Length: 298
Image (spheres, rainbow, N blue to C red):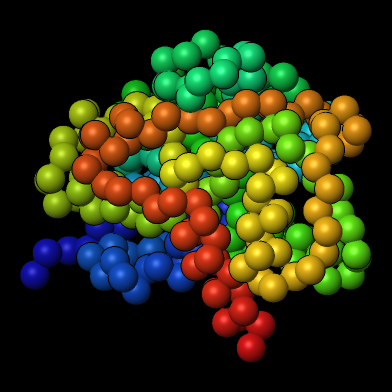
């Protein structure tokens, strides 16, 4: 009987980490170890080295991140420690102990005024502290562990934690009207679809379907399709039967400490062609997430 491959998950109480917990029964060939800050502080290089040395995972899924985009503008040191320094610690440990690191990044690293979908080779142009620290993390990962895989994603939501979908469900029932920006364009990402994609890639690598060297690199992953935040909110209300009026507004009418990319649609061709995997349409993914939220509430 083949020994199970090991997956170490950091940031396991976040949205993607929680979805990985939900999916683990579907991937019996893996042994999972879920950690969060109290179990493994990725900003502590000695702790990371000791943990990886002891567990010897085949894969490390780094789901730990500082994602408070506006707060990061003031909390620079913490954002840098988690998003960049901590990612680098994991990458060096992965390299030293023979693990493959899967690292989650963001569409925020672009923001260069492009009006067609970004591809992985496009110039990066981070526009705020969060974006800068995430890009530095990407670079630290790729430099320390060339065999790593970086997933750049966007507009992440799930049935767990705090996110746009859960906030809209609550506010839509509390208020008669909401003002939502319509000039920021991208694609929502259901965290469960991202988690499943990571596991499917790990399965391909573990079973020898794809060579690890061919798999290494940066990939875009979000659900298929295009939406504005206004469209996203409208879809949530439609699927939930919420009658709240949604008023489209410009980003300038809703100022935030951190600038959001006005256009962050990403081309997923590289991911689909490399791994032969399909990506669900964003409205289908949203419908699935809402079913799971209602199931959790019942």
